[in-house]
Image 1 (cartoon, helix red, strand yellow):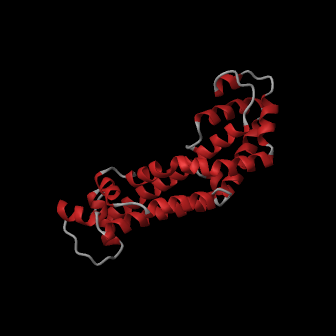
Image 2 (cartoon, rainbow, N blue to C red):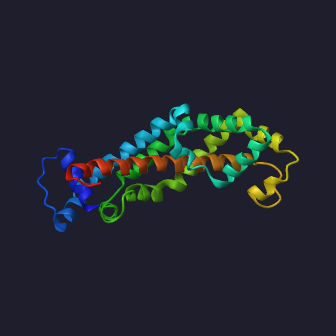
Length: 226
């Protein structure tokens, strides 16, 4: 990770001559240059995520978003596949459409967190594995993001009537209790929007982390590293 910062400085054309000593790495990490490199990578990941979320089809086709699907919602969809397969596709489409409306909410929160990174955060990133920058961003914003977008997600999903449709399809089915816990016999609107919001937020972090890791590889390339 120390070499990651050195390579980044070289690739970004800073013109700095940087030695490979631990001392110089530490100095660079806590400098404005080291901080700006990390911010640039994270902002790049945020912009990539915003582009995906701003396009319904891109959202639906992105495997990093799909991997973020909460277990509870994945189990509900597995049950729906047996009862009303077409409803799963509609649910995915409605969640993707709702995601479009969350971009202008989540992006400023993430950008503010990136701009608040300090020397301690940078040192942790230098000493950590690839993906540590995204991990820190997640720690700073995950709960806030879910709380911020959930009302908008619920509003959009209610507008499409997906919760009522799912409950109609699952009426008389006793599997919801085991899927959602307790003796539940219906999907709660707030519960579905929370699960969808969790997928959106975690999928966004997956995209940012992927961008961070991919760029760290390219930055290490000039040094002949994998």
